[in-house]
Image (cartoon, rainbow, N blue to C red):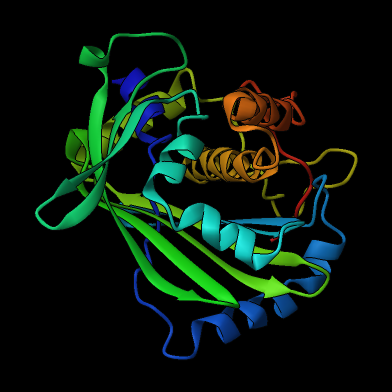
Amino acid sequence: MTSLFAVLSACVCVSVAAAKPATDPASALRARYAALSGQLKHSPFPQHLHVESMEGTGASQGDVYAVVDYPIATVSDAFSSPANWCDALILHLNVKYCRPVSRDGHTVLSTALGRNFDQPLSSTYRADFVYSITASRPDYVDVELNARHGPLGTGNYRISLEAVGLENERAFVHLRYSYTYGFAGRLAMEMYLSTSGSDKVGFTLIEGSSDSQPEFIGGVRGAIERNTMRYYLAIDAYLGALSTPAPARFEQSLERWFNGTELYPASSARLTARPISR
């Protein structure tokens, strides 16, 4: 059960808070960019990036906000294709298989999720994500993946990627990742966090800790933050490899993903914390 939660925590999905804002979504995302300007400007990460997380009753959510050096058209074109999503998601070691299929009038990403080593597909966990473009404009794009069911009583998986154009051929992106879980999922989570996951932390600096002795969020929120970051790095790596000729693009994007994870070597999860306040 411990190993199963390691897989669950790496599943693709997003958004405990599923409701869309009543205001124009592009304006709302620009307002969020303005509100985070200080955190982004003084980000401890190698790029202008901010991580948030929350834990509710039977639900967890992680958010990554980042400024990327790609125009909004590039981001929109890249992730308005289900096949491109699979090319990005497969970079993560826990995603063993991803293929877009047509089912009941919907485009579905059929995925297989496993552990951080080679294993047969028969021993992986399957999850099917309904792909949808909820908004596509010259200045804004919003793409969602949703899965109602997951292993061990988990469900309501969602991955949401939205982006808005900025000046100087840049874009502001927001990746949200979440799922809900029942008793069995909670039990698996507690076992994982009390054993092999006990020393793994996220990125949020715990209030009251000092620069000389920083303490970072652990537990469920730490796990959500690490995995949200891993999937963000997959998206960023895919975008960075688009200029590479197609035959070499996957190897280039995979190398970029590994290089991104190696920026945080202190954690046993390879992605570790740098000081970032709530």
